[in-house]
Amino acid sequence: MRKLLWRRKTTGGAIALLQSAVAVQDTLKYSEPEDWFFPVRESLGATLVMNGNNAGAEKVFREDLERHPRNPRSLFGLQQALKAQGKEYDAGFVQKQLQASWKGRNTQLKLDDLV
Image 1 (spheres, rainbow, N blue to C red):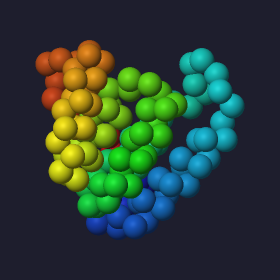
Image 2: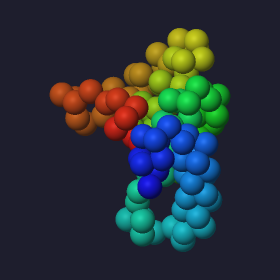
Image 3: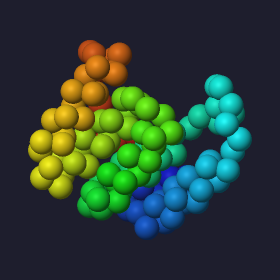
Image 4: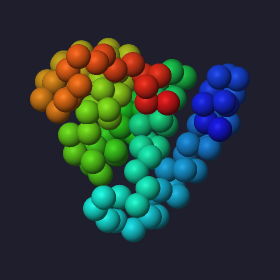
């Protein structure tokens, strides 16, 4: 549904659905592995970046990294949000963390991969 709304340029609807999904996902009990590991915050953050809300995306990716430290996909999203805000120094720092965490060295991530 989120990809359909995004492709139809109904970003407000997509963002609202993703925010609801994050709230629901936050109520799930912690377990290893997680009961439902679909990274909703990654999708929300990427959608916010693509919609120009880079500060909001930065907050979302930082929240995900609190829950999933060194998550390379969230590190990538955070880096993109920081770069879009002109925070080059911070983006460079996150890039180093991403390089240390990313195992798919031959694969280049894109924001679309997170949506």
